[in-house]
Length: 121
Image (cartoon, rainbow, N blue to C red; front, side):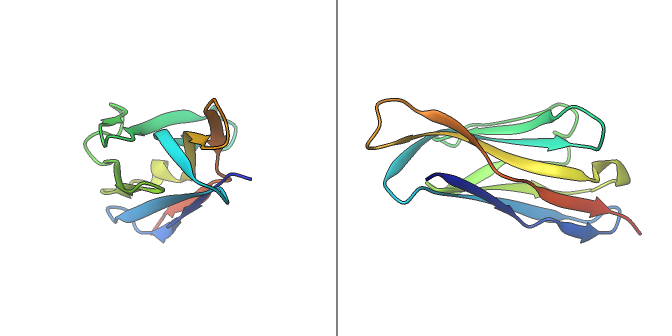
């Protein structure tokens, strides 16, 4: 059973910072192909924020590139530092990843349940 668990969301004032984390657990050995962060506001489509490959190569959406960066620290954990937060960044952030269990031939795509970020004074 594969789980992606986000953490680090919460209430922050405009201009503040948060660091979101996503931890993958599977109950058995696995290898990550890539990670990604998405976010979704109520009534809107989910939008891509950042992607981090297993090799650490990061790509960030042009909309937030000047404020958000993506990084991975361990093989089963990835972070998304959020700086210069604005009220419009008040959304649910989702972690996504493609990984392969060592017991399986092919990788699969998984989603976390999201963590809410609220930017408000």
